[in-house]
Amino acid sequence: MQKPTIHLNGTSGETLTEGYLDAMDAISNAMRKLGAIAPHARDYYVQGDDAFHKVWTENAARVTMLQHVRTEIGELLAHVQEQLAEREAIRRGR
Image (cartoon, rainbow, N blue to C red; front, side, top):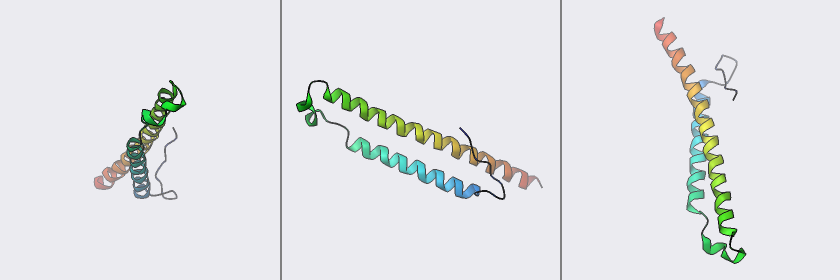
C-alpha cells in the first residue's frame, strides 16, 4: 500500500489525520448499522433451504471487507502520525 509523505507542497498531516479518523469513524458506523440489520432466517426460508446460509455468508463477507478497509485506513493514519511525531521530535531538538 502506498502511503502519503507529509511535505510543504502536500496535504498537511493534521488534515490527513482528521480525514483518516473521519473515514474510520464512518466505516465503524457502517459496520454497526450492518450489525443492526443482520440477516434473519425468517426473511429467507421461503427462498429455499440454503438461502439463509448464502445470505449470512454474503453479509459476513461485507463486514470483512469493511474491516479490511478500516484496517488499511488505520495503517495510513499510523504512518501519518509517525511522520508528525518525527517532525515534532526534530523541532524540539533544535
